[in-house]
Image (cartoon, rainbow, N blue to C red; front, side):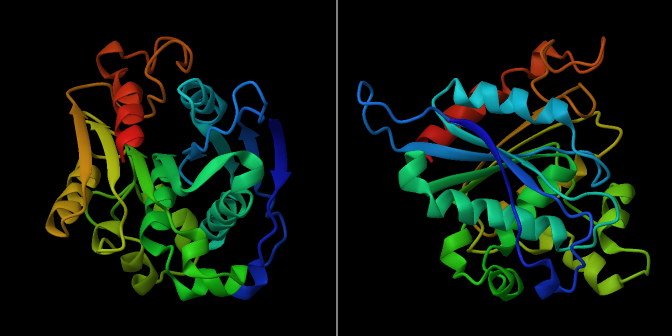
Length: 275
């Protein structure tokens, strides 16, 4: 199955005008066939980065193809960006989770093994979903129960996590809005949102990341540990930011080709298969 659908959650229910909101979900998953029979695949919803300003194609379909090759059913979310105030993008990701779970039989997936996998600002969005799936604001807008949009595992790749000292300011500014809102800004500091409802997590980062400081992942790891949430973490010594698959398939010229970090995807696949 290779198709794209449009997601149309009730934006107005959370006070967001729907003008220029046009989230899509690209499905990259094998069709059911009699020869192979039911597979009950794990689902991975991929959330590319881009500072909440654009959606990086380097962190979209190439990631899906990698994970689809390992037997996962993959979905790429292209969400509303640039000055789309929170929770616009989160509402779209929640709608994607809801769609995947509601259509699990047709898609031949296990509805209790749905992963969100995000990069950079997409990592922030994935972490929002992992920690806010039980938010009454989101369930009200989607007319659903919290269990309908529950995330079973999360994967965070060099994620924006904090809105504090080590934040990526551009990402936070793009979803806080034009008027300063200290309460919302603090709410979006996700190291403070971790609790018993947070799912098992795979997280990786480069120590020399000059765009989104590695402290973002370290703060989140500390919160996961404090709350006894299972996690696997890898901090690579160098590589910078925006590595995607860390090889030529997603590199920009000589950038982002970092063989020493390329094993993150295989480690992640192993983590998801046992989680």
